[in-house]
Length: 123
Image (tube, rainbow, N blue to C red; front, side, top):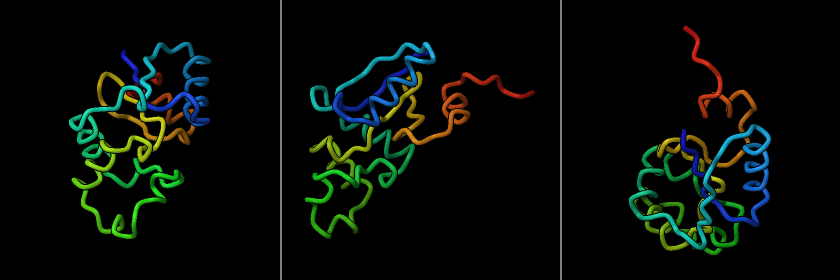
């Protein structure tokens, strides 16, 4: 299993996610989105999986700096905005084996374990 965590090192939510992964002895790759921005293709896949609304960092200054027209933007316009300014992306964004499984880090312990495949499937 390959786990990738997209975020920034100074983000408290990213730190919390990394602490949880470490506490559960999970190996992961941390990708700093400021130093290594995700590609337009990656962002498009994330938006296709989650929609643009769940991956918007609405508490950040970049989001607040956008005009009122942001309320009418299409998914495609959001993809371009995320690509132009990665601070608009909610953090962390976690992928398992290349597939996006979680954005933000508010899930329950059971949900986290299930999404990462740590809980055996019931037969």
